[in-house]
Length: 86
Image (cartoon, rainbow, N blue to C red; front, side, top):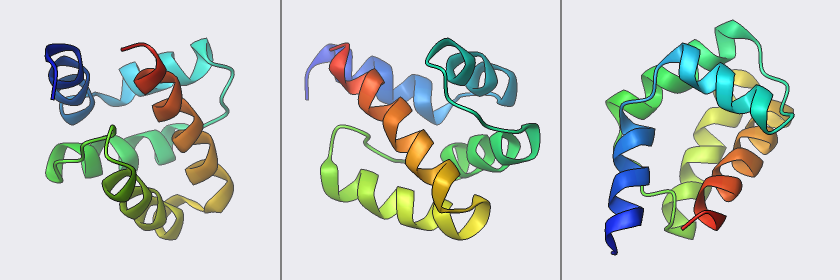
């Protein structure tokens, strides 16, 4: 894993609700505060390598159960934007 992937994964694992809402807005992804809180908490509690397709897919499936499939799809799009940056 390169340094940029480490930095991005660290940021994802420490993301706050406010930051998640900010990034969602920046990338035109609709997410409500409750869903952002749940996602941020899950990311803090579970280490997810968003560059690993299997780990990201597992995470998205878990999130779909908590916040719904449409929001999970949007979050996946957001993560894909993060991974394109590296």
